[in-house]
Image (cartoon, rainbow, N blue to C red; front, side, top):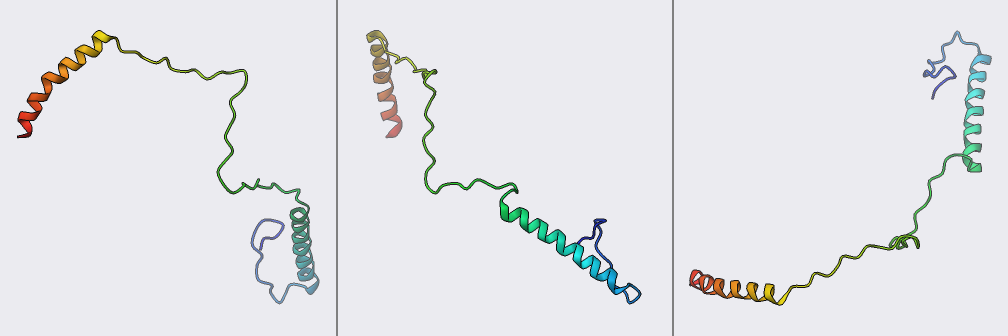
Length: 98
C-alpha cells in the first residue's frame, strides 16, 4: 500500500494520533473507490477480445489486381535436349546402383 508521497507507510507508532491514522485510512479508501469507479464505468483502457476460430480472410483491394506469374513454356527443342541428357544419365545411374 502506498501513501500520497509514493512511499510505503511506516508502521503506526503509539505516538501517532488516532485522528491521523483514521485520515490516512480514509485517504486510501477514497483512492481505491475512485480506481474502482473508473474500472466499473469502462473509461479505463480495454483490450479488444478476439473471436474464437480461424481469422477471416482478408479481401484484396478492388483497385489493386494481383500480379500473376506468366506460365513458362518449354520449346520442343529444349524438351528434346533434356530427354537426351536424361537418357545419357540413366545407364550411369544403373551401373552405380549395382
